[in-house]
Image (cartoon, rainbow, N blue to C red):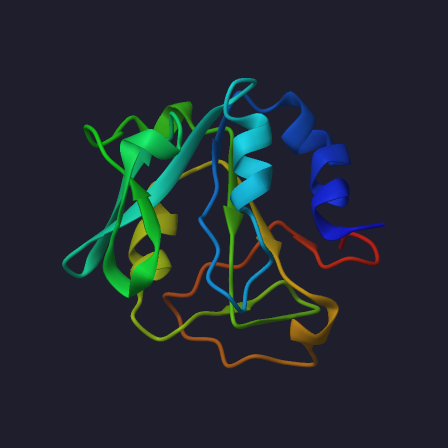
Length: 153
């Protein structure tokens, strides 16, 4: 089953009203069309790079975006700060392991953001990004689940 089809069928996604997603880079699971499909059915939040941190903003359509840091399309508008209203977080990564640990790109953006959000966290990746073990630091936040195209863990 395709990766994003698995996400759509995941019980947490089905019941979620507010979902934090990401606009994919070229080496990540492509989320742009997925976001367009769901933007009118769920509240979609996307991260915006602000200095050393990620700020969240609601996505309302392509017309309300601008190209941000690292060439990522980012929504314009006011920051979304009511983290308790987030039902689900979909997280990209360079690699994940079978213990649901995540390896990011090294800037620490998600390391700073994820501890602030109590919602379930699902790592999204290609099968080849699932490796035996990623290095783990004490501040790393593990995923509650992984979707990588073959099954969920």
